[in-house]
Every structure is written in C-alpha cells, then in structure tokens.
Length: 444
Image (cartoon, rainbow, N blue to C red; front, side, top):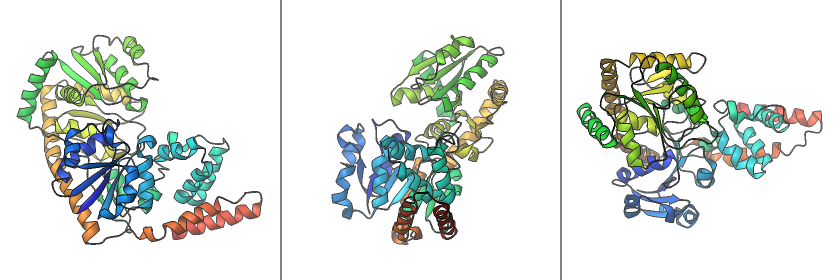
C-alpha cells in the first residue's frame, strides 16, 4: 500500500510535528509513504529525509493518483494546518483529529481573512438554525466570540468528519464525541516514545541529575512546553508559594517558552519563589527530555481545553512521572491511580497543595509510579500505536468501509451557501430560513 501522509514536521513548532516524526519510521517499515508538508526544504529531521520522499502540499495535485489513500493530521493552528484542511476537503482520506475543538482554526481561517459569509456558512453547516443565529449575534456584537469560552460546545468539526473516509482520534473523549454509525472511526491514544522500566528510571535519574548539577535529595517539579495562560502557571506558582511553607527543599523547572502576556517573574517574586523556580526558555528536544527524566512531579494542567490530547503528558507517563492534570476533556479519561486529577475552580490551588503534601512521602510516589508504568506499558507503546494505524488503514481499503456522508456533502454545502444569501429583510424570509434549517437538521 502506498500512502500520502500530510503533517507538520519540525522546525514547525507543534506537538503534531514531534508525534509524526516519532511515528513515521515505524509506519515506514510496513507501508510505502510519501510525506507532504508546506516547505520540504525546511524539514530538519535527517532520518525522515533519508527514509521518505518529502513533497510540498502543492505538488500533491499531480501525484494524487499514485496513492491508495491519504492520511491528514488536523490540528487547531490555522497557519500550520490550512493547506491540509483544504486538501482533505478536495480529496477525502483518513483524518487524524488532534484537537476536537477547531473553532479557533475557522475563526482565523475565515474571519481574519474577511470571509464573514464563509464563517456563517460554516456555522449553518454544523449547527443549522442555531448556528445561523449565533453567528449573526456574534457579528452584530451581541455575544462574545464562541471560541473564547464555548469551543467545546461549538467545535466546528462536522465538515471534516463528513469529508473523511475514516477518522482516527487520539482520546476516548474525542472518540465518544464523534462516533457515528455512518463513520469508520478508530481511537489510537497518543504514544509514549519511550517506556522506561523502574530500574532504568532510577539509574537515568541519578545520572542526569549529576550531569545537570542537581542534588539527589531535592524534590524536582516541572512543567514542559510552551506556557500560555491555560496551562495554569499562575495557579501553580501561587500553590507552590503555599507549599513552600511546609517544604522549601524543591526546585520547579519551567521548561519551554513563555507567552509574552504572562508576567511570571512578578508572580515568582510575589510568592518568594526566586530560589525555587528555574526558567530554561526554549531548549532542544534532548535537553527537554533530560529535564523530564529528573523530575519527580510534573504539572500538565490545561483549562480551558480544546479537547486536545497531550504528547508531553504521555511522554512523561512513559518515563514513569507523576503528573497533575485538570479533570476535563481527554484528561478525564485517565485512571485516578495513574494521574493526579485537579478540579478547576475555587479549590484548585488548595487541591494542588494537598496532593503535594501527600506526595512528600517517597513510598506514596513509588506506588503511583508502579501504576503509571503498568498503564504506559499496556496502552502507550509506540509499536502498538503503529500497528493500530496499519490495521485501520487496511480496514478502510480492504473491507471497503465508507462514510455515507461523502455522497451528500456537495448537496449540503450548496444548501448552507444558499440559505446564507437570504437578506433577512423580512419576517417571511426569516420564517423560510428557520423552517428550512429545522428540516435540514432533522434529516442530516
């Protein structure tokens, strides 16, 4: 089988770039794959350049007939995924959904390019009458942008699932949101690139701490990746300020770039954490992994969430790390004895401090690590993930499973477009639109 594989790759800064770079060498053992990216010359991964042919997205049109099917990795970043989105609509294939809520993508794709009517059509396509009304209320300034607080309620994902031969999700949360009888779908959790047994973890921890000049008996905390407000860094720092009153023998590493609108330094001073918090800024992947390996407890909080999975989280679980997550979206799928689930709200900081007190005990930490390793070994093996990809591709091609919506998409596209052309100047037209949309919602 020959596959066209669409995904960002490094140096494009995206967790999906790392995900694909780890997965592709394994898929390439069993499938013939050509990779499609925005700029082939910029791809930095030498292994992929030696192993695969890499083309620009624009070259696909001439080569599309060479492939049995196409795999599209779809995320919420418009500047990275806009060409992938346009191609998957024209040439349906298997779509990997990395973010359930894509409203941010469409806001940038349409509204930032003054394509207001297209945004309204997208809302009609997804939500019928309700979508039509909400889009117009937003454009008239009556309500706030839906993507700011209601992206999970209005994810704008329907057109993508309707135009796919099959869907791969990366969490049970998204799988259960999307699953339909008419749609071939498979859930393949984000893999852990490495799974280290407990003995190896202990050895690597000691060796790496020595290399980085970190004492063996100090508690190391960390957060990893680009730090934006939804990663709850302000709440974490306030909690650590309280925790320091009980135990001051800890270091908290902030590994990665920080959003410019976050005044982290000021908060560090406010809670007397100058000696405890170390900010690395952007680091190479090797250094990134070193800091992960020496960490005892990690924070991977995200709220609000776009329904995304976290490659960083699963990498940490593969290293046997105790991780704090918000109990929301895909993170709520995880077992209680594998991650520490924090409810967002007024007790969030108190809960963080209480769990840190509990985890002061090394025996408690070791018990968690045993559960984590059992889970990672059973569910997060990259080899198992690659076999699931291959199995699902064969299922689509050999068993000829199909998405029945593919045959009706052009009709529904035209209906959405025509309804949006009404001028709304009369009650009669309003009534026609409402009746039409209700009927469409009933049959669609």
